[in-house]
Image (cartoon, rainbow, N blue to C red; front, side):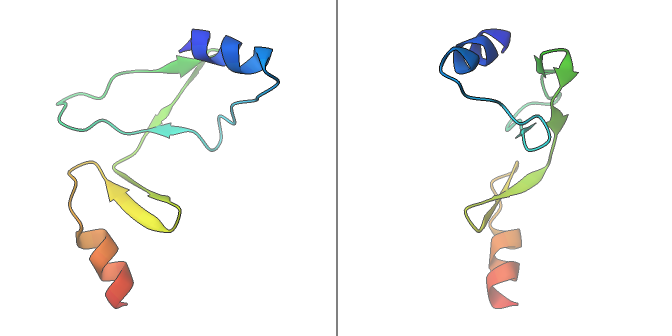
Length: 68
């Protein structure tokens, strides 16, 4: 992942470690991913563009949010 970070930096892009999380789907143990000596937080679900994505691909959180 440091290669990704270095390449991003060469284009003037900065990876916000506060906003960057990781999710593993179909894995018993989530891989450990580090960028610049900071390990990414593993999450079970997150929101992206107003939709909720979960690691088990369930639509229940999204349906619950839409129904209210």
